[in-house]
Image 1 (cartoon, rainbow, N blue to C red):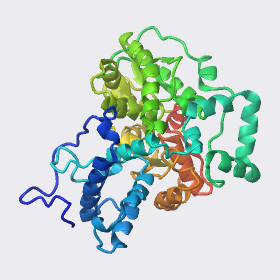
Image 2 (spheres, rainbow, N blue to C red):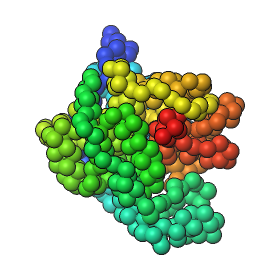
Image 3 (cartoon, helix red, strand yellow):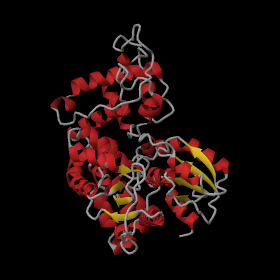
Image 4 (cartoon, helix red, strand yellow):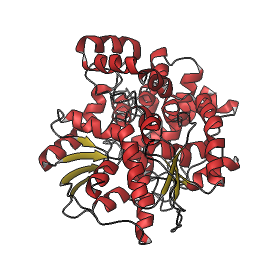
Amino acid sequence: MSEAAPKGGGKREGGLGAPTRHPIDWKSEAFYDEVPLFKELERVYDICHGCRRCVSLCQSFPVLFDLIDESKTMEVDGVDKKDYWKVVDQCYLCDLCYQVKCPYVPPHEWNVDFPHLMLRAKAVQFKKGEVGAARKLLTNTRAIGGLASIPVVTEMVNAANRSPTLRKVVKTVLGVHPDAHVPTYHSRTAHDRVNVVTGALPSGRAAGPTRGKVALFVTCYGEYNMPQVVDDLVRVLRHNAIDVKLIEQEQCCGMPKLELGDLESVAKYKQFNLPVLHEAVKEGWDLMAPIPSCVLMFRQEIPLMFPDDAEVQAVKARIFDPFEYLMHRHKAGLLDTGFKKPIGKLAYHAPCHQRVQNIGPKTRDLLSLIPGTQIEFIERCSGHDGTYGVRDETYAYAMKIAKPIVTRVNKADVDHVTSDCPMAADHIAHGMGNTKPASHPISLVRMAYGI
């Protein structure tokens, strides 16, 4: 290890305290200053070099260790600082290194938060104007979804996504790899179809931290790409006597822009969404979203960007993962366990952005309540993570990261591939050649209820 790295002296090797996150100082000028940024990158890279236990998580760490091992000194000081960006470009903020591997996260004195250091570096890149137009457009999920949901346009977009010739055009415009799985768009959005079946139940019944009334943040993906799953979620909640309404006016949660380093856009989305969500909380509603990344934004990233905002903290305290919510109800004896239909053997993938919420494997626990269900439980990153799994320059890496999961699922011979992250499930099924159907767990629960 080079002289730049902390040696520890008589200090403990790893930390035993529960991981904690520090607020993101994104509004300060120093946050975007490359001199302290590169000093911190060198410090953390050196600690990672001396540890290397994260080498199997994603492509960032193999890139970093190869740069070091191929340098003249075989230490971080031998790496050209311009190559530091190669490590940053491979990080997609899954948070797993922080959550499950790194022994030096705060409160340890070495204070290593690799994902948020990568976020800072991405924010510097974005502020310098080094992010291309294609990536900016690809992360504008609300605009793309809104356009693609226009009836005639929907047919054209879906046809283009199925055409090898037109996929080359998509690659040119959006930088999407021609072989990558891309989602289907629907002209009948979640708000269009779910409003037909939604109606107020007499009253919500509180249980544990839940109030029995849910205001659903549909999300961009739920609105345009998986409206049926949103419908399934509403049906399951109402089947369990939980009143539901949809948040009528919402913007993107901001996760795609966060991964891009575009923190100003995250702030703009926050300015739109938070008053609406906070009003629902004040009216007695709990909050929920069908995508783990969106829940994580309101639980972790936005609160760390706006630590002193009372509305942000109130929303953070009242937003739930769907299965977390349902298992709270089960603990209170309020979950209907009268499942009528089997769902068979499942390969269940626990998404990274759900795992880092520290709620435990609640989806697996609920699925286990369905009689006869066999679950191949997978806790490993799928490699998709938003745009990383479809971009031309990272698609091959995403498939490489997914390969161990694909191999395991193929051997398990399951009936369904499922994940709370629909993009992860589709990515795994894509790696299998779509020989098994990808399903959302809440859709399987509805199937089991026979409703």
